Amino acid sequence: MKIENLYPEKVFHYFSEISKIPRGSNKEKKISDWIVEFAKERNLEVVQDKAFNVFIRKPATAGYEEYSPLILQGHMDMVWEKNKNTQFDFETQGIELVAEDGFLKAKGTTLGADNGIAVAYALAILDSDDLKHPELEIILTTDEEDGMSGVNNLDFGIFSGKTLINLDTEEYGQVYVSSAGGARIFNEFNFDAEKLEDDDTVISVDVKGLLGGHSGAEIHLGLGNSNKILTEVLNHLNKKYTLSIMDIDGGEKTNAIPREAVALLAVKLEDENVSDFEKLAKLAFENVTKDFKIIDKNPVIEVKEIKKEELKNQGKMSISNTNAVISFFHEFPNGVIAMSKDIEGLVETSINLGVIKTENKDGKINIKVQSLPRSSVNKSLEKLLNDVKELSEKYEVAVKTNSPYPSWEYRKDSKIRDIVVNSFKKITGKDPEIKAIHAGLECGVFDNNMENVDIVSIGPNIYGAHTPEERMEIDSVGKTWELLLKAMEDYNIKNKKFFKIEKRKY
Image 1 (cartoon, rainbow, N blue to C red):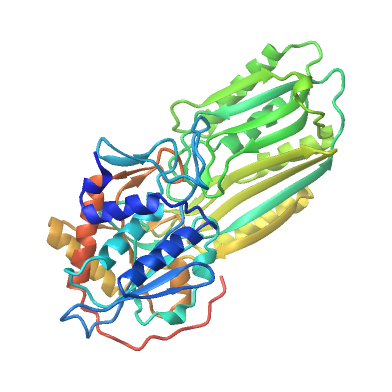
Image 2 (image 1 turned 30 degrees about the vertical axis):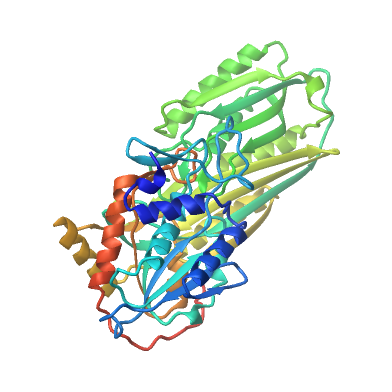
């Protein structure tokens, strides 16, 4: 089935077009330039800033001139993840799209529906002359997935409107009205390496077969975190065996729950053999996955001996440094920290141990760790950040925090929420579900920088975002499109003076 023949044809046409253009986080210049040319070809006012954010203005249609401009917003970057057995170069190749069983998918990679569908909706609207709408201010941002530097460098004075529909929600029939704030935490260990000894047996311990998932929207589901599972297994093994870490590697993206992790160890087996070590590792793995109550159906641990001649003179960490690293990871928080006291079923605070990378060469071992804490309560986020800082000081590991973003707080008197809810009821005869999300949306940055900005977020059904299993329900794309058009048609918010305010601290 041709992607462009799916409904709505124009939306899927543009989704297909942008999928041909590499657009990973911090690599958006090509897609940004392409969108600028698209706007210029249609004689639309367009501004591209230094962060490659693109702002496009489209005049109101007849009868809507008196209304306040409506801002439509999404981000153009996507997470680049692929299966290990998939041969694919994100830098040069376009995403290979497949329509199957009612879903749009990609071949062995992330799909990029998060948030390419917002770009496709925007382009389809801009390319249509038969729609009813107020003046539109469309803003497509960069680097949402890797720190939100695009929206954080946006000139908010460019907007005349103060009503915003964000198109980065992944559940049709849900109207999101609040999201969590967060930050990136970076830890780094640096050690002198020791040489392998004659009585060292080199063993790899590999955790895989996990589903992975979005570290905000899916953190509460019980999905296994390969980094945490692996380090807990090492903590169990370290109680019986003398271990020295040579390498530990897991995860690719801070905002994705890691699916695979592997450690390379120098082990003193003494009177035992590798099969004895393997038995204990598998027992520990079973206990850890049971304790964590993970829902993954096919988690696997593999243990095998590695020949020393294959290691290219790699060294090992000292026993004391290994003990410190394993203890650090054992104490490192992961997953849900607290549930909301105000909104039933909402995660208030969480953290994802997303990435562990080791470099072992020239007599030095460097371990870099990335994690992502989130909270809808700023004080809880501050406490979690401080807890990690104190843990880092305890084990003398370097720590820094960057890319903070604020929470988007619930607004009781939202006119745009009322419009979207009523438009949904007109189409379906039912009320949508009003929800808050634990993931971080750019809505929080808009809320933090624009006085009295009125925001909602909607979108189609997207599952497995940030993983190669990402898929978008085709039918829900059309339903979201109809809701968006109906909300624009029903829009009746009058102009009021817009004020720009200084960025609040968070």
